[in-house]
Image (cartoon, rainbow, N blue to C red; front, side, top):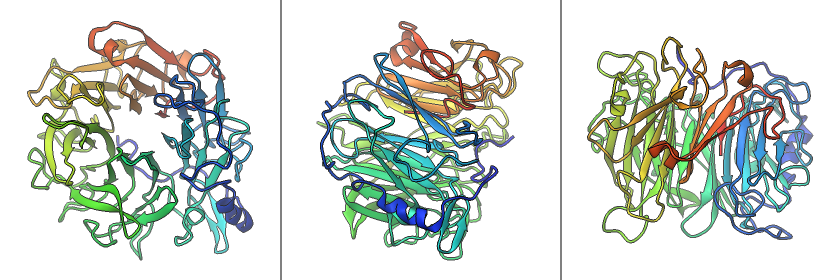
Length: 519
């Protein structure tokens, strides 16, 4: 069984007249990253802090939720830290320029950053299957993206909302069917303090090459697009590259996944393109294109259908001898990698990115890396999701402080097929072994059920790991759930594991795939 590799799907209902599509660009009260007209009173907090009170909040996506009777319209639940309440963000929110419709999948991607630098984090949400009417007619699955601004009251009714189609964000582009604008998102602040947002558009046609892909990039008031035919960008835009399928970024670097990239004669081998945030001719600076045939990567080789770059995660890294986090570590998921004769077992490559853009391979991992009885298995898809964490930010990175969580959604647990697991590994330790596999009933609460696909939601901060089980088959959890656990708990078992799910702790008992993404 192949999981999560199909870009399109779902019943669609066309909406948005041409006027509404044009209004979308003007709907924002200010441009992405610009100072707000009237600054709100927020105090910079830690992580996803939407109300600026210094306590971490959580955004949990359910892109398959029914909203206003529309199946798969999608929503995001905001769980404020300190038991301060739960709110719902969907296209039914006041200030949106579109309504919930069947198959939009609002929340298919989310990112958190402080777009207006007011101290309250803001939530970016992708709805890649949004249909948009333009002057050229109905554009199915063109996609949309939204930025919902934080404030002392948190996210919800009354929040400022910016709504964008592709052409609405950048008038030099065109909104077209199948673009999937908003399929992936990454946001943050550059090392110089400027907010940025990258938006993946993997279905974008470049000339007559369908699904070649591009990204939109916003830094302050600068808005641009990047594709593989742009000057100095490695590679060539080709059909089915799906450039922009995945994104990861730090204050210094941006990584763009193209899991459909052909390497030589090997179709869908996959590649990742690296940039930094320095703008040259209005675009981020291209550094290198990395695939499994890159001279710096010694453990793998590009092969047909590997899909290198399906999943990405990146964290700042301070190497020994440096006085700050000058570098970055990038984890690249290759879920269809064959391990020996085991097809689609999956692997993860960890890459160090130096300030110059030079790359070196730090690690190469598969299920064997977890030690014990772990062995690669056919169609496990090890690396479908990856999450790096630097548990001691600012310090020199070590084998103890740089953690890697790897989702293996199709892993069997006992007799439960496709129950799923999350493997915890040291990103810097090449010795093999020493890791652990978390499954429901072994490291995670609950009981593993067939087709749970545990770990399809995966995110980490320097303090905690978040594991989503959006397709839980446990009777009490059929709307999905999220486990939130500290890295200390994972290391030595101390502390508790929180379980968030619809119907508990103030979260409405509604939805379908709660935990598909977490921030």
